[in-house]
Length: 337
Image (cartoon, rainbow, N blue to C red):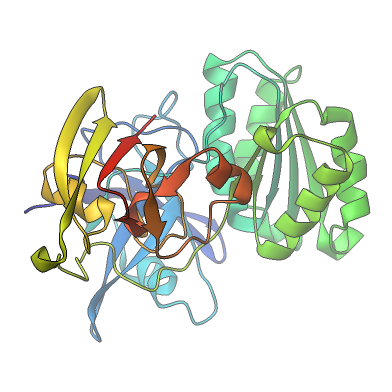
């Protein structure tokens, strides 16, 4: 069955942001997205047909007519270098619908952002949205190697100048101040520890920021994390087929305001079952690494084959990954909130 969440996008413009980063601006498309989400793009490959990579949206659904993602070159990275070298205005590329859960609970509250490098990409989307439709105070702590590597420098400056009473941008340059330490991040974040917090950047930066927030006793449910993942499998392709001889459970799914009762074969992952049934279940990586397919287990039991994104607090609240879940009990109830 055709995937109901797959689209072909046309590139309207390519913008050089820094020496090693480009923005791809797409022609208007007929779907919506939330600030902080990402696109999964299918990049052609001579070796295996294609590879898939996730790129965060830096555009805002509230202020921008066209979607825009940032692509930053990585050493030895096939996909990022191919996109930077080959994509131009008029190019087309296949994509999954926007996905991801790196979104604040509300755009009206006070928000603290901690970002490093290209981690600014989804943060910019949220900031523009909150400044346009929200009323809270925003603080950005943004770390980079040096001044020339600051992505969206002009756009950030313009936002700060246009909203002097609501937006504060604090730059951290390794060339001047060294690597951001836990102690330094704690001192910078301390005055704003009552805000909802969003973190995005490389692993060492994220680790230091999370330790700093823990020292400030910021509750776990007020912290949102966006992790960079490099996909090993290709979510555009089905990798396994159900085995009809292994029995079947029954699952009731609440999705997009509707309720659906389906037989669930024992060796079929929940996401594959929903997509094969024509239901628009959200997903991206299909590897248990991004959290885009997260849903809530209301009743029954499932087995997750892999989980690189949900923490124990999430599991305790009943969250599971549809792309990794197999049925255990005869009857299961799932809710997409």
